[in-house]
Length: 186
Figure 1: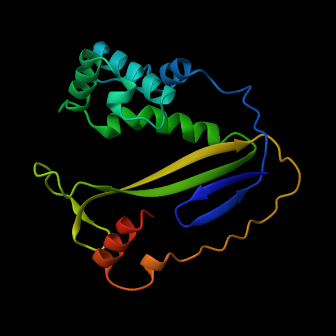
Figure 2: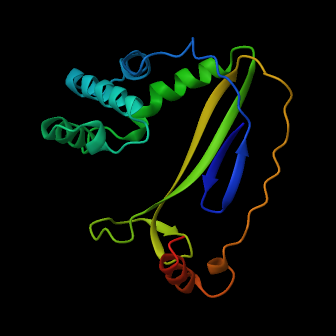
């Protein structure tokens, strides 16, 4: 059994094994998912495949971490700055392939997460919505990961977790909680 530390308490995570024999290497996955995306210029499609492979290789990293050489990073920024195509054109083939795979017989888990992208302190950003307590400006990013269940190991046991309230989160407005939290090194 694994134990993980989170900011709000301890969580017990049941140890399970995952069959990774059907997983593709990042470069293979990127070519399969984005290799025939029509962006108007084959060089843009090649750059998209290269970007997807690098990000799949470093999924928790940033663009500068995935592309440590300046010329490669600049090329990715140029790709993302194209006005001829947008996110819909880039993701269309990937979305279609995901829907096709999920229509195959079997059980699927759709694992969802919503993350707030806070651009409040970026002066050049425009037309963003409110986030958090309404004072922040940014975007809500809702991601869904589709996973096909190959088999279940053992019994599914519900995990009951009691989250302890930190002293700093009990009283005061958000500014007071921030000050208390940082002064105590939460």
